[in-house]
Image (tube, rainbow, N blue to C red; front, side, top):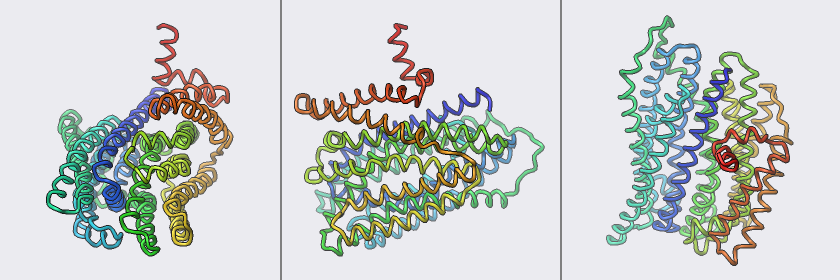
Length: 537
């Protein structure tokens, strides 16, 4: 692989990862006022509705960016642009059918879902999320088109645009709907959740419009080049899409099913044990929103890197450049652990100020939220590792294995959570145990398959042990600064200073443990900028 291509792949991956972080940051910002507007019960309805929505999304469209990207990458690697574009058109038709079907099921089955999950008012946000599934199905194909061309910029811009529109509309609509419901004597938490999901629909629609504008602009500038390749039949293209989408759907459905099964199990079993519906819904809101939102921020980096890495792995694998593919896999895994491990440690040691600053109106659930983050932050590492290893296996034509691994892990997860919820007094903390063990099992099974099938060997001391040691050093420094300054400076200032110290300590720790070199660090934009300033350039 040429040096120019390597730089391009790193740049594209960085762009998508940065967009993922920006999107998550925007998500944090707007979820804070929205959570305060909706209240704990409304927040619980919002999060449970999203669990159901994510299942519908996964079954209909979540896999489309990955599938379209992979199939187009294979054809573009052979210079077959004609069939790549032909495949994209068929993928749009495929997504239109699956997205519309899922939307209809979600819309007309909203009340049935509300009864199943024992959540009064759940049908309100679900009916808003129904058309969102259809919009996102088409949106996924558009993102897959550009990712297949190894151009992550349109996807990145669309993600940021989607979140900005989502944030504005969600807060405004949630506030307006709650006021209207209060005036009319309606179910205010349910109406607030409906307002929040309205923003999701508006954001997806704005992103789709963005892609329509891009396609309109480039249509005349990029005519299809005449090639001597044989035109693939629509029947064969649909077959390729289906058999590429199916294992991805099954794999991702299992991930999403884990979340919504937790909601289903917790709501019904805690009701059977006598817990009030409002209390159970509020606890689910804390777990799904405050805890999961914090876990999802660093995990978004792994997801972005997986999406950005897959086309390059497919290209290298298709060309038979196995050694280059292995090198790419090894680099991306090590880089991700250098992000995931300190993130997990940081979330654990600074759980108190993070929850206190970001979600000050948790009130009686504040201690619960802090303890959930402290005990469950390790899930960041395992979700990052399972996501990347799944992408590696899929990129090397091992599509079935991640599905099998995820299915086995989910079966264990469901039994474990059900037993812990019903037969112990752990309550919501049982969900934490399940949330950590599920990606842990997937990671172990995936890593074994990667080592066996691809002849890769994971050096645990470089991949996990040394980065963990550097992260623990960083965490000790951050915790020390926070608790020393908390009384004098307050929670917010102490947390900011602790984060700054954590960053300052972590870099020398990496260098001393020889996990990175000074030259490699200088390649990062922020480090390069600080280095130049220190030299007065």
